[in-house]
Image 1 (cartoon, rainbow, N blue to C red):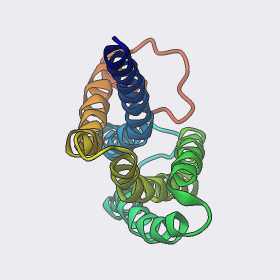
Image 2 (tube, rainbow, N blue to C red):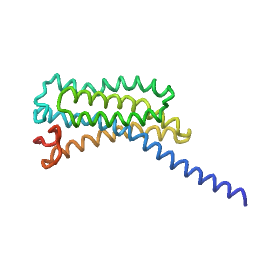
Image 3 (cartoon, rainbow, N blue to C red):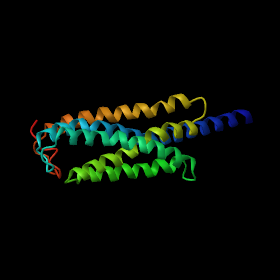
Image 4 (cartoon, one colour):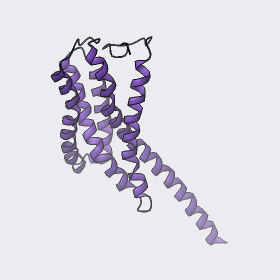
Length: 193
């Protein structure tokens, strides 16, 4: 009788909670997909930067090294800032939300860059976001998950980062082979393969 109805209600509640938790994990891990994409995308861009076919001209080895190094340097700073922000009144969820704005700002700075300074600034800002993502995403998912699913859901964050890296490599390869791409502000896309 009544006991079975309560158990069915509990199962429905568990299903809703599991679905909401999976959605939370998915959304939080998008930050890690962006981390992977931001980290891996430089591989495809370097090929073009070496040819000098962008509006930035030919870049020296030192300049290319600085462009590449700006993201891990920004990640170091971002990880340090994330520990302060997530312990402050801002919290982990809001840290991740603001972090996604950093990804957008950094990407816009790189896409619209017409100088070495703007390109490196964009890479550094994306690096800040990478540092926050790697510091906060797994922690946030772990804190939201019940013990029975914590390990599985927390493992989604590094997996999402790997998916982002792979996607950036595949996309770089695909875009390099497209010569008709209509919009290319920096000249990166339309370079000869």
